[in-house]
Length: 198
Length: 198
Image 1 (cartoon, rainbow over the protein chains, first blue to last red):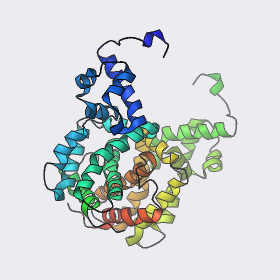
Image 2 (image 1 turned 180 degrees about the vertical axis):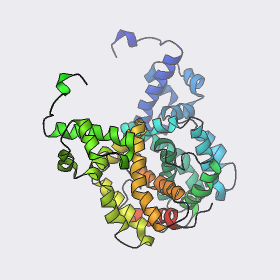
Image 3 (image 1 turned 120 degrees about the horizontal axis):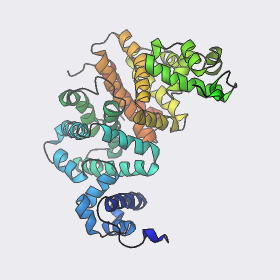
Image 4 (image 1 turned 90 degrees about the horizontal axis):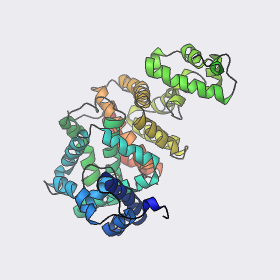
């Protein structure tokens, strides 16, 4: 902290963005999503808090970028949970998941997995993201055993990503979204709202 | 190849083992499991072919080690496919998968995922391994759409590993094997032998 090159105002632009992302990863890991404030992250990065809105559209966007996810919890809530009946929730999950990650060429998902498998802090942020997004949803559904359901759901959804984008296991890697919806959404829907065996 | 230090006989021991693993990854990637011979791998590593038996117990063991898997296709066939009725296949898959990777402390699975997400050659070898082990099984079961079944099965099984060992998503990360069998084996069994929706 006494290195003179680190003192004072940083240059605007990509340096600011990178400093915010690095600081966000530290502060979100230390304090969790709820505990971390935009002010604290900006202070850690030594930049103006207004830069968070400028670069990431707010705390949710900064969090999503720090976890290397291409969409925010708010977008997922709108596109998935609020967009139709609960009994078709899994259909919307698969459609949103596949179209989002296909748009990154699959490389985004591989980068996410690499980070989670390399750094415990990345895995921790990913767990937080899943909890924020899907934990809230399961709470609103009012189902029994929400944690177990979330774990089972997460295992199948993450496994779809792993098979399609990392292992590139055919025919999952090249299947169109309707085939994946027809085959995998019933499993996900069962995990979310079906009768669990135990 | 003109570096004099690389010429002649390598020292026995860990150097030989490492040279065989590196050569195996090259040759299996270039020629596939069936096409690769112990002789070709040993020649690439510049060691005696007998060292493959000494260190890895043969071609299957060398392949498993090269893919960073703790068990061989032959062991899986014996412990999973030949050990009980087909309608309980998924129960034996989950039990073998979880006990095997738990025994590596989970670090083995994370290393496998890291490799597959980093190097296309590692992902390709993993696909080969899955095809050798489970493709043969599905062929013997005589079910329709074996490739699709294998992909769906692989997505849920890999997702279980990702949730338990990489993301460490609770309660999947700490669940005992019977809980995982009760909740995930029905999905896997459906993918293997149930009626597919399309």
